Each structure stands twice: as C-alpha cells, then as structure tokens.
Length: 420
Image 1 (tube, one colour):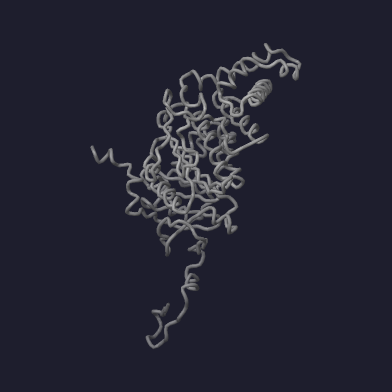
Image 2: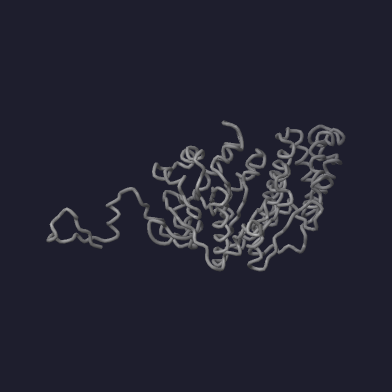
C-alpha cells in the first residue's frame, strides 16, 4: 500500500508500507481481532469478516469463560443475531437449548424438524425437574437438593430455615432409596409422612418433622395440585427426544406471570440434566436464557443460575443470557443487595459481551459495568440497527450482523405489524 505526503513536492517518491503496519497511523483505535475460527456473524466495520466461537476461543486460551451476555433494545437486532447464531452453530455439530419465555424460537426448532416444547398449566407435556439424567451418585442428590432449595426459596420469598432444610434432606433421601427417579408428588408425600428413623436422627418425632416441613410441602403442592399443575407433576413425557439437536422450552403461557421465575427454574433444571447427558457424549452445547431478568430478580433462583454459569467449563457448555438494557442487571435489586451482586457475578463470569444500541440514560451505567473505553461509550448511543459492540475478552470489535437469504423465516417478528 502506498501513501504520499500531500504537502511534499510531487517529485518525492511515495512511501511504501504493508497493511500490517498501516494501523500505526491510528494507534489504539482498532483492535486486531482474535484470529480464531468460528461461525461468521457479519462484517467487522473496521475491516473484514467477524467470526465467533466460544469453544475455539477457550481452547486457544483467549477466553477463560465460554459464557455470553447480550444486551439490546427491542428492534435493534438482538434477537435476530441470537437466532441466526444458533442456527449457524448447528452446521458445526453444536446442540442448542433455549429457555424461551415469549415463544419466539419455535421457528428455529422447526427449521430442523423439531417442535418446541410448550409448557402450560393443564397441558399434556410433563417435565420432571428432579430427573437429572446426566448426573449420578452423590452428585445428583446434591444437585436435586440445591434445586429444591432454590425453588422453595423463590416461592416462599425467603431462605429455608435449618429445620426445613433438614426435613427436605430427609424426605429426598427417603424417596431416592425407594425410587430411582423421584418426582415432586413422591417428595411431597415423604414430607407429609416422615420416617421414624429420620426423626430419631434429630431427636424428634414423626409428627414434629411433619410440622417442620409443612410449609415447604404445601408450597411444592402448588406445582402438583395448584395453579401450576400439569407441567412438573409426573415423569418426563416419553415423547420428548432427549438426543435432539435443538430443544426449545416455550414458556409463553405464563409470560408476565409472577410464577414465571418458578417455571424457568424447573425448566432449566430439567434442561441442565439433558445438557449433562449430551456433554458426556462430548457434544458442545449452547444454552440460551432469554428474558434473563425474570430469573435474576429472584434471589434464590439467581443463586441457582449463577452456579450453572460457574459450571459451564466443567459441563462443556456456553451459557448465553439475553437482556434488554444494561441497567437490567442493577434493577434486579437495590444497591448492595444479594440479587444485584449475583447478577453482576454472572456478568463477570461472561467474558463475551455483545452490546446493541442503548438509550441515552443507560450509557453511563453501561460504561461502568462493562468497563468501556471513551470511544466505545461515544459509539454506544449511535449504533444503527443490526450493529453491535463486541467485547471478547480483551478484544473489541464493531460488528454489523448479516442475515442470510435462508434465515429470514427464523427472525421475522414483524408479521403482526405488517398484517395491520
């Protein structure tokens, strides 16, 4: 590449240099990229194509965490990116699992001949949240207990007290000794009717243990006989293909309900069991939690989600949380609250941040939480639809997402508006 000093006489020879060195003309402005293979996302607006794969980046030592957080206002292209990214990863043998609170990922599942799993009260589909198909031994008991504590803590809006935790542990142990894969009805029965040997271990009586566990038993009963019955009250439906490449859990029947957090933790618990099973077969898995604010607002459920984020490397999965605004991480709880601490912990455990345009009032909080440079902050409010700032480890790129001709059916969310 040749450059000439415009102020010099025309007789002066042009200076020759390479594109490798021309970046010195604008030092510290453009990142050179990570240089690893991956699915093509679109165009790097400062030159070339932009590709991304968290598993390749982790293997190359560029990332220490495969988790991703995506921020974007409605209508800025956030959902289009997530759907096409998942679709493209299928071509590389990845498996995709989506927790879909609004029912927007059905087209992705149908694109490869799968039907989304629609959970609704009184419906025909059942998922057993205690059926952790990828775990075994003491590990599965600990995971079931952690799930139940999160579920009950969310429903009761408080932590379990020691006597409740003890009774729950006794009930779960009693059931698993008799039944290989317990269900919530089995557990509720054990809580209402504790064993004599359990009572003796804590110098109590069966009647006292039953009273100690009565509140949590009644709360779990809601999932079996109450307003949420018909989703988690039996064994997992045999019609579900546990080896499917795409599993979409459609939770739209309860979108906007206070019960959405409970629904999401039960659904993701079952889903993580399936993911562990696939991980044992050395499949690379991408788990998307859309509308993640619905989980993060609840401290008990947020604790459980954070533990899943921390287990990503052990399980061989890449978690992806999708939110609207950066302030969603702060809105989950007051300053200094555990909810906010957990939400920010999930952000810290996600070394890839994809940020679409943010409202003017969000810019300052985005700069602080995401450690943005001054040029990045100036760009954030002016990003056009489909363009995002990518922070991949220590690398930054400005990327315009490109939708392929065969992908428009996956991302069309404007059909209702056009019909008007």
